[in-house]
Length: 258
Length: 153
Image (cartoon, chains in turn red, yellow):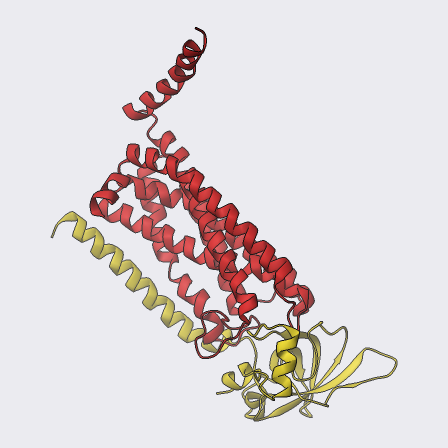
């Protein structure tokens, strides 16, 4: 296990290993997404109060979960990069930020679209919505900070500290609906006392959550690979890789001609 | 202490320090972060009288009265322990119905009525197909919207 992680920490191995994983991850994402959307939008019954409008939760809830997950991932990767001076961790944290920001935006936008007909308003300043908006600003601040600092090491260090400090917002978002009176409803899925959601509606939701999770890892690895190539552009393995790519097509041509 | 351990300590200190600061700040603002007051809090005189605030509760069954030729409506909000009568003139959200959790924004009048300028529906965390809801209602087991009672503590 440790040997495997050590291999992953080496940029060259990371690049080659993840290159092989991405097609599989992408295929699994597409499969889960297609099944989840079909079950959620066609098979699941309409809600007893909201009718068909509740189906937006199949995008809203996974997006909101992922917005928290990606932030925790980013802060953890930042901390690893800070403590162990691991370049790979910095690279992953930087690559995760725009994906997390997109999930946060998606959660806020779908929430507003659902809120207008159901609550009667696009937006309210209750604890859940406000803390999620702060999360979006944290992501944007992180991205801006990364772009403002030229040296990748300094940028990674400053970004990691911002991400770690901002991570106090994560439990606030999660527990906001329990600590304070909010317009946003309380947790449905993570409640253990009684089933708050019918199984026929819950399964598509869990499948969609899995699809979003797989999508995140697929996109993360793709972004991290290109980020890595740029950061390591002066190293030997990248040069070899690039020249290899130049040679390969011509070698194939030579084979094809006789 | 190795440099790595020192960095670990620093990260730990940052997290602990920021958490403590946030906790103190939130504890200090606790009252302002309450999105709405419950009818019990109003009955206990905790709600402000000079300016607009929000009140949340369940629409009491059989309490909704509409004016025949206007949008004006009057209903009673309850949290199980206390009640407040709300007057409102405007469009109600889709989820507005008797027994539904509602948040009304407006002012408390000197006579104890609540004059609302906006009415929002609070959705609870229960999702089920209509047939299941019907079956639960027949057996009297439809989950009560316990949100407001829980918050009235």
